[in-house]
Length: 584
Figure 1 (spheres, one colour):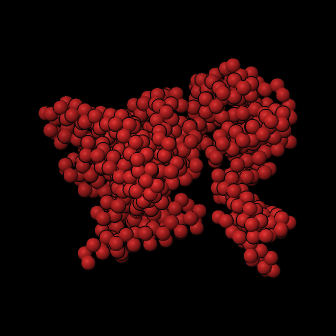
Figure 2 (cartoon, one colour):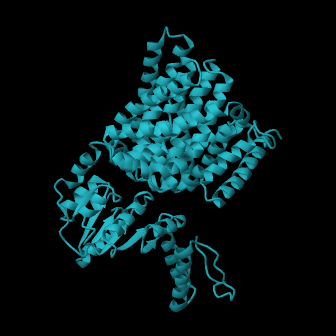
Figure 3 (tube, one colour):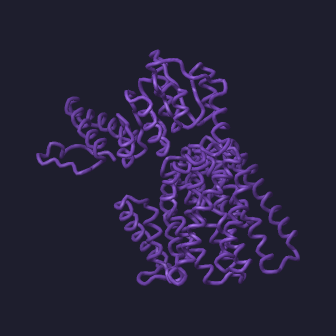
């Protein structure tokens, strides 16, 4: 059976990716790193088991479409438009400056000016799929850096159009350059208009018609059709699969079916997006790196350091706050999937050699792998950005204006007024306890001020903002944000300014508990774990377990989880908890 080759390849990819992901998590690294290594092992350029790269690449494109579609559903057009100025100005500076950096490095290592320009163009484009996946898994898509990253990725995706159109110039065929550019932009503009305008009117109606059948299968088929259909139509129009799927998701996000669509597409997104990272690993050619390893190192270091600095500076110039600019810069300091496309087109047109093509792919893969490590430099880079001339003064005006320092004592300070912070604020308000709020959403800050709640726009990791909120006189600090860069810094500043203050912090995941405790948090709460505890309470009650025994079970699990993390060597030799239900 000939078609069984595809199934065999899929089984092999899933098995090796699973093994790679398990090993990566065991080493406390992102599972994505294991998927990429699995791709290297399965690729045609390494000995051993090999799968068909074309088959995997086909499935990987499906994964890209589902992933970007799901990200689009989670956002809304208004969220993108809110940071459009930052993204447009930042992208307009970042793309040409990064191209200049790449081209200069290419010339410095002895490449021709044509191949150096290709290298610069590849440097300028980041991996929207990886960057946004990284943010989703860290729970940071709703943060300022998440929104700015998303908007910047849209700008970079659109920049792919003129970059591809400029390739004939590098070949020496520039007779019809203007016509080519006009045609490319015209087709792109029409495609965008069709997706956004027609989709906004048609998609919600189609979803409503199918939803009325009350058939889950039909609804899922409609969702898949919208995601993949828009993605392929976008590619045919000269855009990209990723951009088309993302725009389709944005259209769905404006309908009443957004949460349901997200739930239906989730498993498909997770499965097929794994194949995308395996496909990236399969592109790597280890022999080419070994042959010219010093050039590889120079290109990689120049890309990571140079692009991070350029992106951060460009976003600052666009009006982003220093912290969001720094964190976004470290997240997008890599080459992306469109860099592969650009390099592949250039190789096919004989603008770059096979060796140069392999080096560009190797640097791109290595830069993607390095992204989680680059993200650790977000806080140091943020501190550097804050010290730049004019940055601190500019941002101080935002949160000090019309908002005098708090003149109360023994109050609470809530850092992050999302779903968790808002519930706490409402409870304090009802009991008459005083509190102040620090948040990065200007709409929330404005609304709270109208309600006479002291609210400050800014980053809780800033000591100045904490002082302004009265941290020295406060009784308790609640860090309700899921941001793992801001939270530890806010806790450390609070403890330094007020050693007696009680600090309660939210932990996005079990692996973050030790980080927050080391920063000085007195109490740590992980919402997902606490939801599991409440599930245990209700289920055991239905099975007739006494409240006393249920409380003992939950208390024991809390002690294990928050002291050492889940399953951290807890032994139960007497079998006291052998019958305990486990919710993970």
